[in-house]
Image (cartoon, rainbow over all chains, first blue to last red; front, side, top):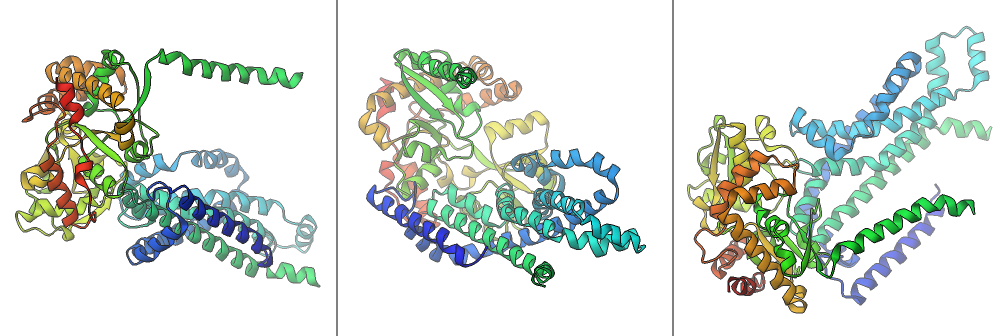
Length: 252
Length: 327
């Protein structure tokens, strides 16, 4: 996505916010039902010092959980690629693992692993690693056949073929998996915290909701969105950097 | 033509749904009651009123709803439901945020909540909470309430490690990292008795009388009282009879609740009902009555602890309907 093409959604967002502001004033909507964007902005400024530790806790959770998901996802995909039998056996279970709702799984994890950070890392990693694994596997499957033949003809070992051809070729696919997972990893972290934590955006949300401070709930929502976008942006940038050889190739 | 045939089953289903909805009412006014939590013995009187036809006698058709994660106070305040089960603490906080809800009947006169801890943890009085891990349910009130009951012995609640436990089973949580939790004795305490858990129970009101709140209670909205006072009266008349029945016939009342909610543990319901029935109106003139001083004391406690800035507490409760129901 180019910066230039961002002005359209930005404009739409601005118009939506303006309409929202107008509607809350026009229909005199109570703050506890739907706060105006300006009220949310004010609340954000007021509450930010108290909110910061919660935000940092969530960021830490996402960073640790998500990086483990990336490592885990690529390793699992590699193993499944090397051992096709394992792939046949494991695949259905991978899919099943994605069908258990977080709200059910989280309390169970807390029972099994305690209320520290570990069960939350696990939840984030579990939800995020699936798209990464699938996309990586896809990437391995789409290696250029001609180049593969060349490598084999030149007598490259399996290891060489993998590291010099298959893995680099799969990078764009791996990144599309990572980007998909990145968009909802912040949300997963918030839900996990909501189900049991000491600090975090999820905890802040529960506390605000239980005291009917709807504007604070919106502060948490806005920050969750911003964090998710920042996260997505980070991987977008990383992808560009990692695949720059591809673009160079095209330019030649 | 083919498209129409394909749509037929859906059309039939739609008609069926519409049919079902209009069939039930039969002239009775439909109202919804939102519970605060899963059904339990706090709600027995309502189930009695429904199953024994007290609501019908008053011309009401009451649907009992579970709120899930949505707050009952906001549902009632916004007029999406007519009645709800809430707590004095919640109503006070909601009123301070201008949510127009009113408590119209206290379900239990005295607060039965307190702190629950396995005997092996060695927590005997609130002072022992220091340095321990508290499994919080997620409210700003928790720290202030803990400090209030620790004040008597000069304890410091900021030394408690608060961890939100959400939906985790309390008993299992306390076998792991959690040292103590807050419970309602009538339900979780009785559950502990049944499980044979060796527990200490520290009742909040013993240490801090200002925490003796009406919990739970029945709420409706300002608008209902203003525009449909007859409906509110009819509802209160029926639940008044329902709770009177539950007070006088604990066993039969428990059976009604078990029949209506078969997923509940029957033994828990029976023993909880036996414990709770004599407590519904303990020390009060009649079931449901609320004293202004109790509301004022608790509001002052919340203001003092900066949980709320201020509240017009007289608007938070109303005895008019109970007084009429007593006649």
